Image 1 (spheres, rainbow over the protein chains, first blue to last red):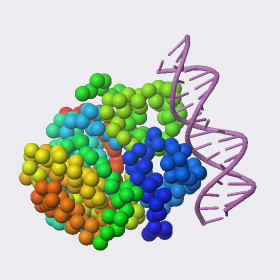
Image 2: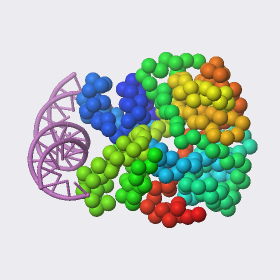
Image 3: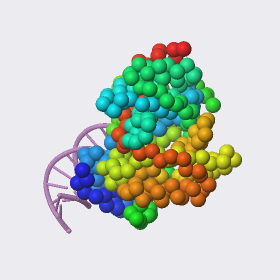
Image 4: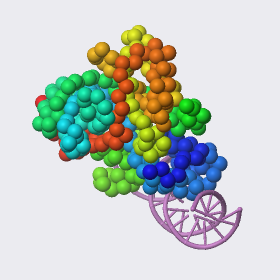
Length: 162
Length: 162
DNA sequence: TTTGAAATATGCAAAAT
DNA sequence: ATTTTGCATATTTCAAA
């Protein structure tokens, strides 16, 4: 469902909100884009209604927040209840998010944070009880760089390049 | 660096802002927590200054935004310039974020979105030119469930459980 | 950490393009 | 249909305590 393809204003709004969804005010955005504040809020409402913007989240440095261990658990659930399992996995304490893999041997990617390694093994055990075959545990860095080039106004040409 | 361990108020603020960083107002939060609005903004400022909150981002449904393909590219850069390469990788169009893996054969995880598969191969080529050995390309679902149990007030006991 | 006042931002309705 | 304008309301900010 793509009711309306995104125009330049939409893309610039998306780009701005991906970089700063809280401190940036509608008024500032409006000034940048040289439109009225209500135009900006109308556009944002549309993007939300169309499901293009799904939410606004604070990004947390888990290490500094007291969870020095971050890991991705790679696992497999039977195709039939993969989605159910994914949802249940989300409710396991210390699980941060879950993704489904579309191809390959494994089909679940579970991000976990913990204070100690026992947190990670406890999550792994809980996943096993949900019917997930745990394949690998991979420690990852908490740091991540989010360039968010997709909606950069300048990158438009490159993105649509064949 | 953990100047002050997080107390109950901090955790509840983090939990709230992870679920909704834009529509929720300081005033509402204050009412929920039964403290004054300025206490809430003071706490938030602290969390930001201490680097626990690193930013606020709009979450985008890339599929609906015109990028039906989402993938993770798993690759390896030499340990010496892995961090430099990670930063450069972020500037490649269509790259959404980059993570470093701490152990294992591979050490980079690059998330990419694209309109067509040629976008993905272009990114893979660009990464190769940066010195990354591309190991796998894994298509992933756009959907993800973010339960964010880590800061749920109720989960406190479980989290600290050995 | 709270209180209260000033400045600013948002939301809504009506009007205009 | 979308954008703008203007006003009433709500919120954040900053001072001082």
